[in-house]
Amino acid sequence: MAKQPKQNKTAAGTDKNHVKQQNQQAAQQNQNQQYGAEFASQTDAQQVREQNQKSQAKKK
Image (cartoon, rainbow, N blue to C red):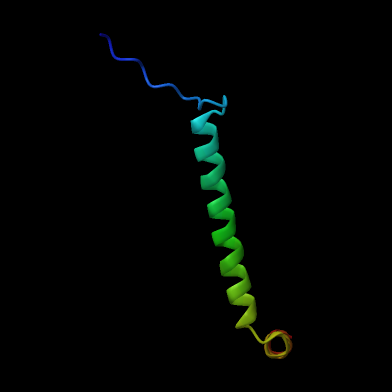
């Protein structure tokens, strides 16, 4: 009996490699969004504005 070659499709006809690639991309996007939200929650926007104004004033 010869071994059957691995098929890249499920019984439903879904391409396994395509699904793996999509899952990888989704996980990476989620990770990036999570970092952005965490960074934003730790940043005091008013303080940043004040620091930027002081910095601009020093340049002039």
